[in-house]
Length: 605
Picture 1 (cartoon, rainbow, N blue to C red):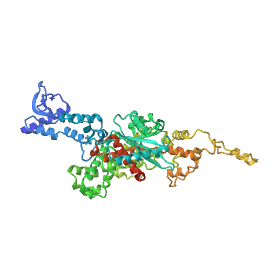
Picture 2 (cartoon, one colour; picture 1 turned 45 degrees about the horizontal axis):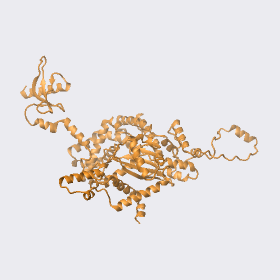
Picture 3 (spheres, rainbow, N blue to C red; picture 1 turned 90 degrees about the vertical axis):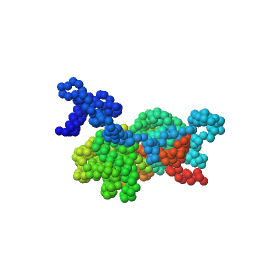
Picture 4 (tube, rainbow, N blue to C red; picture 1 turned 180 degrees about the vertical axis):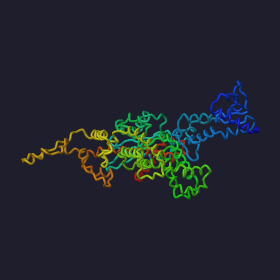
């Protein structure tokens, strides 16, 4: 055996002892470089440790030669797996304000960067310490940029005033709130209002874009909302009468308003559940990286019939959209595989071959959620009545997979074990979030003509829905029906009364809820919920009023995020010193101008 072979053999032996934690090897003493430890070895039967001429990397535990040279520095900078992993994770978790060219997180505090008097005086003191002579005139000329064009400011203020005058008839009755804190634009609270008008059409309008420099607790949030809406003339009673739709982070907001409505868009399957299935999460991550590379390569974009979804880390369902698009475009991507880097080619090959069944399994389970997510985030129509039925349908679908019922599914294209694992996880999530929904959601199902029988719900849930609607109806007793004049009866009438097997109704004939529930509805009719209640306004006037209040509540707070997109577009680096009150005017004015262009025309005349 040569000396080199002996050295290699000893290195492997020592490496094995280190991995096992054997006391034959000691690595306590620090080498010249603090990232490495001197390796000492004690043979069998000996008491003293001997220097082996080797050092161990403190991070990855790899053995290297202890001789002088640049190999230790190269290992620390390039080859150490532990350090490389930490760098990769750091790049993935890097705050987006570092990558300022492509995307930039905007902090609401920056909009008032030089507007405060304390900050302006500080700048003046610094200037006077350098050259002197600066006074009140210089103070007023500091470039704080706390204003916008006067015509834009006046237009925004006029639009906001017109909006709140328009909402006066709905405040305290049908108008409810939708709230969300920003992720792209931080330290701002987006507040929207939703209501159903006299024509039974749902409207969602921006109410405020509030700077929120303090905490995000339920108390702080309620305080911000009440203070701002009181400035617009709302009373505290009118504000507290609102339902508030929000995500799980503000679940205690209901303590300060009429009730809290759990946002459905954040309640399908949380990232924590997906983390239990690391392999599937890895498939989704690979698809997002492929989608990002495709969109960043102009040559590749020209060769595709359409672009895949833009990857986004703040929405976990975005990864499923990326996976769906990449799999649909896989044939075109593979034809242009030469445009990818070596690592990108490996990802495409893995997704198209090794993980193809896993990809199809993910899409099989999550395809309904993508459709539901689109419906519940688009608040152009009433969707509150669809929340609980959607959860019931998902639960039944998952249970079907767990019972090995894959009817209508090509078994050869999926992995049954992974489908069942996702289904089990999905049922756990559904059970958890289903319990958070309130009587409001059950009442919405009852007041939808196509789900009023609640055939998929148990007796307790049906009773809960009916009890909620009855409590919403006026407490005044219905007028007694006029009794018909007594008529002379013969023997056959007596027999009919004796043998009748249909119990007489214990409610009055004009009880709207009973008449509504007993009314036959053609399930094949292509009539929307809005059209139904428009048509029934004169037949069920009291119930119509209850339905309009109930369906004024929206199922998701996703619409609030449009304010943050508008802010990110308008409040760019050229306006980072814009005073936050003016920033609110800019965002609100643009939102209202887009939603009500006819108002802009009226105010321009």
